[in-house]
Length: 412
Image (cartoon, rainbow, N blue to C red):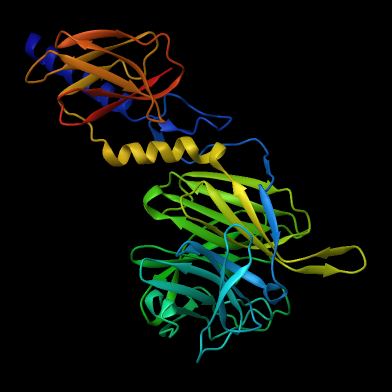
């Protein structure tokens, strides 16, 4: 009987440990409902209303009055117009001045609404569909980067339709949910974010990124309470930044981050207004996820509104720096199975139980930015460490000689 009771107790303890090891909740310290004990992001984070003001804004050349997409590539910004010509324009990142114009010959610009990229190709989305919502020639142009730089663009085409669009009756202008102006490219796929004039939501569709004819599969939807017009993707950092505007031309950006795989709406979803009233923002781009470029088309509504085409620079480091630092750290850090930290989360102290080949050594505690906040000598295989002076948050424990592996703990 004693053996059975002991076994039951061990099973119970193991079950409790497993339950405590995974706590679902909001894991973003910037959220109003941040749960410091949460280890798994459940996408529930909520945020206070935020308005972002550009660091700089530059007027663009008159030839870019319909600029509609942006990428950062080859140390410059690249853009295009949505229906006036078939050029790609390279812009100076410091002034917005046109540095080079590259004609893409042998193609038509029905409604170029977005530009994206991977390591070898630039992708231009000819999929604007707001005139009547019934285009049957939706396509994405794929252009070799090396051929653009050689002034001899090589183009092939990806044709697609929406898997759930069965009615092609003309809807009239700006009255369809099958319009699209935002696209990202991953290591193996293209993802479209629709601009829904009727519902003010966005739907994600996916298709292969190779030439062919495809039915774009519907993946998921989200109520953005506006119209999405541009997207940029940091795949290794699990970060997507969308831009758009409301029916009253109030522009915004939507940050999607810390999501699971390609379930882009499963993580944090933070909407921030831009202090640019009556700006039809259509393009967004970044190199590293902290400094962003946005562009707006010219918008004139006489006699009161006359907004010229502009390029804007945004600094989002205060919103994303901690998250991106955590991603960078996790890239180089592996959990050391020979080290156990408990309790975790902890309040006043932690116990470091290190089953190492040699007990003597040093331990180092660093915060999310990589700054070492505490260190000391490890004299015993099991050692109590005072963490009462640390602020609440996530920390990493490194033990010298432990094959550069690191363990994470949470201070409540």
